[in-house]
Image (cartoon, rainbow, N blue to C red; front, top):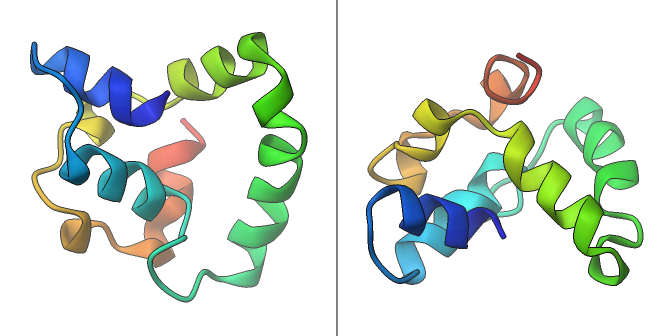
Length: 85
């Protein structure tokens, strides 16, 4: 959902870069700090079984965070600044 939302903001179909950004936001492309892992566990628990939960997660990420150009521009240590607004 995050990748699709990011692509939708750009007016196009999702591509690999959208998926990379979505994964990087939650520390799945790097060693995530333990507090981020603790934060994301309940968010992703059962997510595949609930469309409403998927929408809530996708809508919780601010548009400007989804607008970064590359996943490597995301500092995983600064996750609170991106996700806890």
